[in-house]
Amino acid sequence: MTAQVITVTSGKGGVGKTTAVANLATALAMDGKRVVCIDGDIGLRNLDVVMGLENRIVYDIVDVIEGRCKLKQAMIRDKHYPEMYLIPAAQTRDKNAVSPSDMVRICKDLRPDSDFIIIDSPAGIERGFRNAIAAADRVLVVTNPEVSAVRDADRVVGILEAEEKGNPLLILNRLNPAMVKNNEMLSAEDVLDLLGIQLVGIVPEDENVIIGSNRGAPVVNDAKSRAGQAFRNIAKRLQGQEVPFMDFAQQGGLWGAIQRLTGRK
Amino acid sequence: MVGHISSGIIPGNGVTDQLMEPTTSIVQIKGIRDGLLATFSEAPWEDQQSALLSQIDDRPTFFQGARLAIDIGTQALKVNDLVDLRDRLSERNVSLWAVVSESPLTEQTSQLLGLATRISKPRPEEQRHFIDTISNDTALFIAKTIRSGARIEYPGHILIVGDVNPGAEVVAEGNVIVWGRVRGMIHAGSKGDRSAFICALDLSANQLRIADEVSAALKPHKDPRPEIASINSEGRLQAEVWHAG
Ligand SMILES: Nc1ncnc2c1ncn2[C@@H]1O[C@H](COP(=O)(O)OP(=O)(O)O)[C@@H](O)[C@H]1O
Ligand SMILES: [Mg+2]
Image (cartoon, rainbow over all chains, first blue to last red; front, side):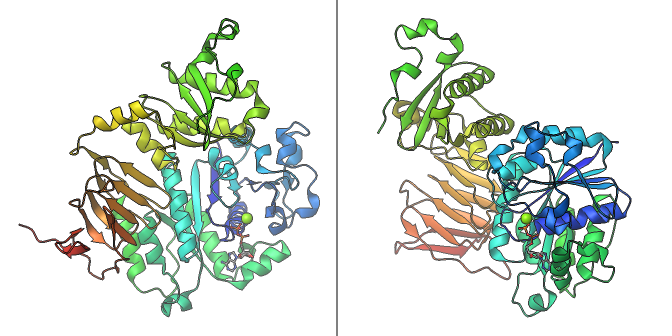
């Protein structure tokens, strides 16, 4: 068995890519999977902080590419899950230190000994984005229920389609059911209707996400958190299991939108 | 302003020619207003690509950070060819921004990748030749949703089976027909044809244009019906529900 490479991307910054990578990786590790996370946001690394591994960094991905260390030496083992690793980004270099073929090569070396390789990507659709998607078997597009975030997600989906990167999956993050109800926020069905790609999960707005990130303990560890539950469900779906979508007191339209999508494919 | 950078780097010039590798004369690079333009002569794509990359590798400082347009003549390139070239260029810190081509397929591929297909100084004779071969009744058929950031341009009609999303632009010299929802910008009769029309299953466009007439944003309908937009007898752009017959 060889690993599945999953890239998490968005176009717009600050929508929850890094949060999603840390949480999905942790949830997969909780399910006993061997996981390697790669921080593809060269120059603005923060996946290590969110995963609570900042103090352990000795080597980073650019050290691997430029031959200053072996791949294994740049893999930081997680504190709680011994089968989960992080390959950190370089903080003091820019994205041009990495090329798409470097990413393909690194993933190729990692594939035989892992189940999932999860790559975090920078904002934008430039070089760093292309590095991040170069090796992807599957792309997760994260967006928020906000017009500008959805517009950027649409752009990213268009590029992924043009580059024949398969069918991306959508994570709708930071949905606030109360705001949707009062018509103050785009609803899940509005977003799905526009993007027309398959939904893999909706993550509600949840302050525990921020608390977890600040502590370096992703929210999936918190059994009571709704956002944590949503990420655990997404991780199950990535493993091919059928998990019903959580009910966020949506108007019935969401189920219609999901069904329309399934019918379309 | 078109100016050759220095005759020294342009192969095929006088004495230096004999000393050059034969492959290097496949590509000519010159400066144009928007950056650099690489023009290929007839050769297999593989050879053209390696000729270009080896020219860049020979003079890395000259090409550092350059914006490059390529003119690939009549070749039909696949998505992977263009993506691959763009990545190899980007590894050399050269950004590919435009692809000029006489192949409609290559043009469409480039447009979907968000690359420009017109540059300020195209080769005038051949550009005209391309347009002449497209009669007013030729249509470009696209069966996919046109997403934000994509601009589709065609010198005939455009027929889309899919949506036109906000942030996308569709520009035709003829008519535009969309079997889907329009929420982006559509321009029909872009070269001034006031008899051009736009029709769609749902016209909630953020802007429509026909010739030089511009409509304001159309409100999304609760219960959309097929509509057709055209310039009416008072000379204004208006959309009305489609009635068969
Ligand atoms: N579901 C959520 N609820 C509340 N806050 C969230 C949620 N998802 C992300 N955040 C917060 O949003 C901010 C941006 O998230 P981050 O993952 O860093 O985005 P990106 O990597 O896309 O730039 C962070 O402060 C994060 O804690
Ligand atoms: Mg991030």
